[in-house]
Picture 1 (cartoon, helix red, strand yellow):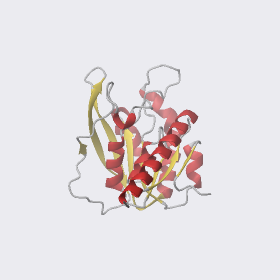
Picture 2 (cartoon, helix red, strand yellow; picture 1 turned 90 degrees about the vertical axis):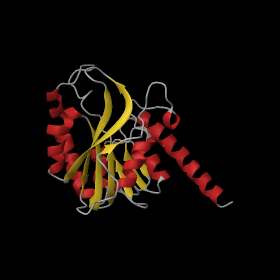
Picture 3 (cartoon, helix red, strand yellow; picture 1 turned 45 degrees about the horizontal axis):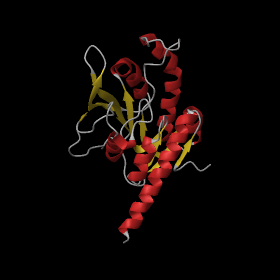
Amino acid sequence: MQMINQIFNEDCLDGIKKIPDKSISCIICDPPYFTGMTHGYGDKAQMLDLAVCKPFYKELFREFKRVMNYRASLYWFCDWRSQGFYLTAMLEENIPVKNCLVWHKGAAQGNFYTYSHEMILFATNDNKFHKKGLTNVILGIPGFCQNCRLDGGKVHTSQKPLGIIEKLMRDGSEEGDTVLDCFLGSGTTAVAAINLNRRYIGFELSEKYFEIARRRIEEAQKNKQSAEVGLLF
C-alpha cells in the first residue's frame, strides 16, 4: 500500500499499523488534549477523564517506537494538566523524552492568568541530536488570535500556524525525510512538509477536516509547482 505523501480518513491506530518499521524520521502531533475528554457532552474535563484515553495512548506510543528510525524525533503538543504526570511517563516507556519546549504564542485568553503559551514534549532516538542555537523556549511565532488572518485564516478550532510546525520540522528532520501526523486536522503538517521538501503521512478521523486538509494540500502543491516553474525563468 502506497502511504508516502498520502492522507487517510481513518483512525490513526488502524492506519499506523500499515506503516513499515523504522520508516519515519519525524512525528509531529497536536492531539485533542484534556478539554473534551469527558464522559458527558459539554462538561468541563476532570483529571480522572485522562484515564479514559490511557489505553489509546499506550498503544499509539508503542507504534511510534516501532515506526521511528534510529535518529527520529517526536514533537507532541500538550498542556500542563496532561504533560507532567500522564503523557511523559507513557512516552518514556517507548521513546526517550529529552525536553519540554514552551512556545510563547502571544495571543492569550482564559482566567486565572491567560494562556499565552503551549507546551511541546520533545522525544528522540538520536543521542547525538544537537543543533546550534536551539532553546526550549520558542519566541517570535504568533498564534492565531481573534482578528488575525494567519495562513489564510483559521479553519480548525485548535489549528496551529504554519510557522510553528515548519520550525519543528526543520529542527527534527532533513529534506527527503518522512514526517507523520496522526491527528492531521486541517492539514498543516502536510502543507509544511510540502513547503520544506519532506514527505508526509497523515491520519484524520473527521471527514470534515479531512476534506479541508485535502484542499489545503492540493493548494500547497500547486503553489510549490508554480514557484519551481518560476525559478526556471
